[in-house]
Image (cartoon, rainbow, N blue to C red; front, side, top):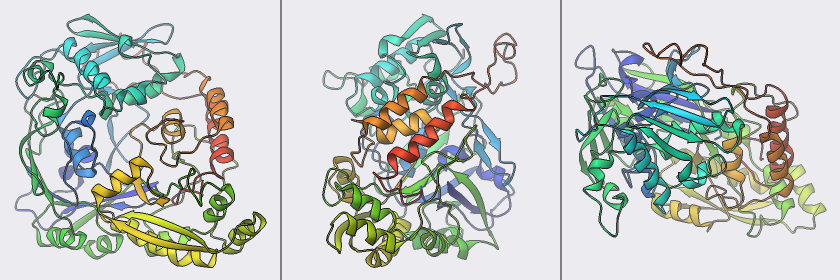
Length: 551
């Protein structure tokens, strides 16, 4: 679990910064040892804010999610806010913190007003919102949906094919019924929750095909390359109006947004590489929101004219150990290293208590979660040495731990690990590199071990466990494989989805939101319990997750 802490100017209250689309989108942040993300500022010039200045550590590498080159929170925020999907997870107020969050177990229409599920549970028919226009002024139709998925499936840089592959046969699963109706056929009736979740996220964004076709070329038939550096071709809540590489991105509210024009009319993302400078900007009133601040900086800013918000998210700090390279190709070394991590010390010294350990990559507050039998691994240097000795491994074991210089808390975490692991029989060398080099090395499997922030856009057990463990998955960064684990996954996933819960908006026809409404939940017993149990048995010895149990 991650603690998201938003810091903003005092005065207007949480709802001002978390306007209709902004909060969970523009301020989307996620970390795996549960950590802190922030925004903030000084006294506002008026009771309400109609624009926000956001200071962040990174610069977008692309404005199209399917063009590759993911670079961080700013990019995610811009892409989510400038594009739209058929459905989304609705925003609700957290009962404890009062902060807006997304309900990952429910769905509501955006470009679709409603959807029906066939009696066999395989066919989903989406009724599209009429009268919608793109940021370029073109009418939205079923052709835009079909064309967008043609683009997603054709682009080599898109992850859509991979993430949908276990659930949908391919592009042929999509059908145009008429100008305002499309259907999607699943491979298994039990995959409905995961597919709706996928349709709510980056890999299923719908584009203005009429406009993008004017930018296509023989070498770039779907304008993927063109849209990487250009904006204004979506249906999102905001439209990009300017971009200065390395300096800023400016978005303005889209009056044609299907769910209504946002109350906050302008978002300016400014690139400020140093965390200390971002903290100073928020304190001086030069920014309204600051991202990627250290927990110590958050503590210093809390109070006075600066407001902070604490909200659990699915973000985490993780440490994949590359299982195909020495020394972590030896399972004993991986097991021993799990006991060499000072988890509690990291939570207190690095995150100042604004983090929590997890016993699985799955969130314990997920619907029907059962964590029986899942235990956290303690820091136990004697146990680590014992495992190494029994395996005949000579100590100290040399480990190169790579960290991203753009994630200051990860750097501090690495220092804690380096110090404590020495007593456990490991000689850890920290290699701190710039974000672009880090991203390239992480994706190519170049490192021995590395610390990174991560999160899953889809929160179902099926998706998360496949995402990080499937053979051939580009996100299986530890290059870990287990036939027993895959067999257990197949058994658990064979349990059908019981139902799908829809968050009904006012005006939704009762025939589609009432008798036909289905509650979203997996089998409350066997399915979920098996997923949790096998996650413990199969993955714990193989890959160490610094934020969980050394799993």
